[in-house]
Length: 198
Length: 273
Image (cartoon, rainbow over all chains, first blue to last red; front, side, top):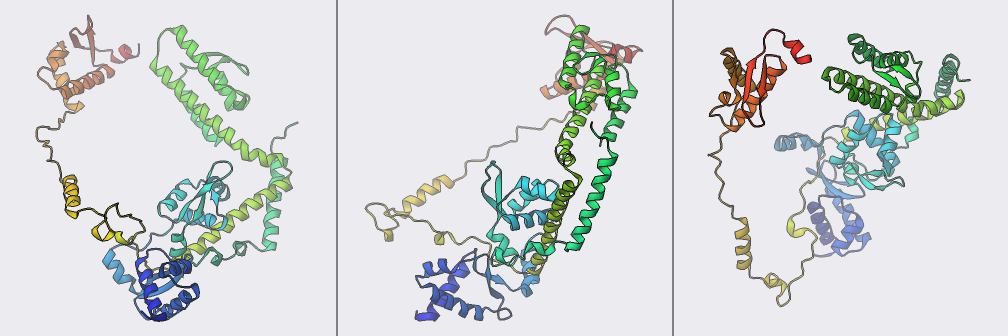
């Protein structure tokens, strides 16, 4: 095989074989090529597998490169495999996943504290589905969780950096002030009305 | 939550009074059990300061002095004490977070609550965003199968004396024979001689009642020629008859014959004692 075209073919084969996204470093090591050469080969492939060109597209997901099907082929794929690609998330699972995604590594008690309700069954389901994985233990011995490569893959993310800043969903300062005011009034009502010691 | 617990307790309490007279002498209370319940319900005795274990111990003492176990009273006591335990555990759990907030100045408490609400709201919105991302990826599939075995990263060292080209020095035929022996299935064990016995308590009840109508009979008669399963189920049926006050039995010596006879008229009194 000669030069860039040969390397592009090798990279294509490696991507075809691997069920997980492959990083440039992994590809370079396997193909015994320099990383800049691999990058160049990847851009050749990206053009060849651009969306709309074939049934397969080259995607950059989960810290690596991987082949994925064109969504336009989904109907046929579903008839072939008779089940949807992924089950949808329940609200509890989505919330738990969001907390893990933003705060990782994070423990179940911490997730429960933020959600205000137990997250055990949601966390277990996410673990079973491979969207989160264990990431060691906290100083108090609780299992910590982080999101997996599969999570990035399924949610179309190159890396966690692509998640928007969580603060964007915070209420405006005015709304916060009003909320604070309401809570304060409720607190005073309780302190005044309830039975007071002494 | 507290109100619910009260309703349950007073309901139960209204039904019966047999346990009510149990006398208690505890650190925070001394008097009959029903008075204690009333005081707890009116919140005049603090459940948190009451050692429920002592109540149980008093009851056990009471049982000992009575010398017999009245199942109805015992059941009632267990229900009551379980309700108290549940109520108490809820009080104890609630106190953790509630008291944290109660100890604070209203301003501080409001801040704390606000932080919690914002946290929850933030990640609920983030969850919505994740769902959108997932929906946007709808229809995209990936290779899910693992790579073929010969491509997985395993380092097989060829054995001494052979070369990799010769399959690591092993004769494929020998390997094939070895694995072939392991793969051969042992002959299936026949289960044809085992037949499932299906005997219901209802059937045996009917059988026993039939015998009862003719007068007293022995247990051996009732199960003559029956298999073990039927004997066991017949025993269950007999216990059921006894529970319903339809039959009573006598056995004069250990392993001796059990005579079963119908109980006349006053079945409930006979059982409850």
